[in-house]
Image (cartoon, rainbow, N blue to C red; front, side, top):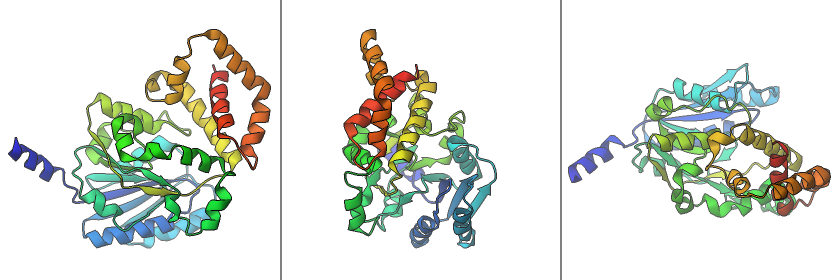
Length: 316
């Protein structure tokens, strides 16, 4: 058994790495430069592929073009937007190395040990590094920005309220329900055998369904504390619209996502039809007032929770 354990550990060592960054209208040159510097220090074979999924912001595209001039880096500009799942599958197929690290283009590297922490972990299937909300101020480099966000930015308030769930031991308690593509290391052969479901073209839940698929095939997932910084907080109106889009995705695939969404679990636990009808009626009567609060300068998390529930039920 000990000999097998040593053999398995040797076989699972990370000796080469493809970093894959799906992108849409985000300037990610600084992120690529950070990652490249860390990779060069490891001396392992590597590549960084940025897959631009049909960005329409010409200034953003121009800012990202220098990526291809960096060693072992490529900026792949695709004319047609194929969606969040398909662009990730495309990058996995394009990658040349046996281990893939998916990183969202709006993430920020928080420390110089980010790559080496992954290299020290044996990877038989999947490793999730997690995210740090606001990066403990490190990623913004400006504490005044933090003070302006507090109490005013809905995304910031929501992510900070959920922050405890990002800790590795919390994620490991339900490993398949906490798989997120913002910072995800996975064996290429696993990814190619179990690709993202390309029916997921719009925002949300393509990674959740992947977690379910990996569980069904008994692919091990390990959660560690090796976070990237989540520092980009869209406007309140944009976040509300993105939330609505995600809820529509959840509604479309609810039968497949059962057991992998807290909202679905909450709704399925309400067995009295009258209560569901009252919530729907409340949303129909007050959704404009609620939305005005959420898009305004002092959004309420309680109203946000009520709005999400009412919006989802109104789709039924």
